[in-house]
Image (cartoon, rainbow, N blue to C red; front, side, top):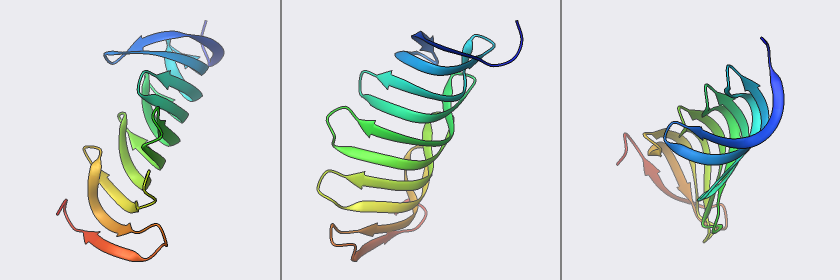
Length: 117
């Protein structure tokens, strides 16, 4: 069968086990869906079984939240909010802040990150 199907099932993709509800194509999450992982929950877009496109992720313990774009399961461009209220807005490389700014819990500028430093 071709095209996009919607389902809820356990998934093993890219070395991870997770529970998935959403669109499936070619036997993998593709399109919009929700993935529940051992370390948190993702709501957003998948491509070939990976978080890819717009989405939101929240750690299971509530220690941080991210909203923005993902590329191959990693943060790309968005906002990362820490449990203490500090947040980073900008670009990520390999899932880490790369170019952007940190703000405190009162939305005041704290520091700038340029090329990961």
